[in-house]
Length: 149
Image (tube, rainbow, N blue to C red; front, top):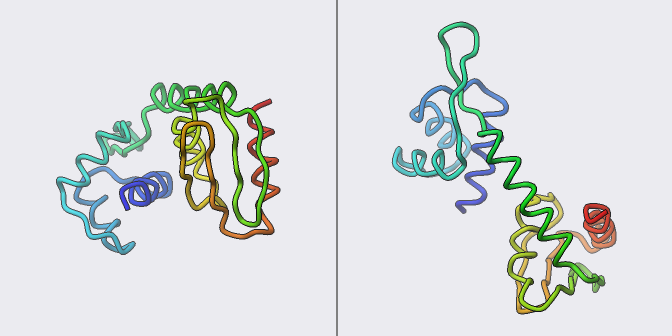
């Protein structure tokens, strides 16, 4: 729920000029999320949102650029260093990793926010990714391979 809510926050601040926590909470409620001001405040902090000026005196929330870039680079490094191979089995993508790297690779795959990936379960050296539609499993596999290059 938290990940879904935080994704919605990013979507909302990208779409609208939101300048207060109250406005963000109101939009989240309109989208079907049951949130408090404290929850919104915590999400803003965790997402490293900052305010920038727009149109004179007005401000809006944006994603902190430097942390977003380092966040992305960290996950790309994990994918490049951790994945050994992958194989499809119906709507499951089985990803083999370096021993001890499966949880990090699973987290990196989840962070990609690919619309077809429902989620991942990780062991020590294997990640099982559930894909929404079995017909998309091979395209997700290809997507991950392309990311590594």
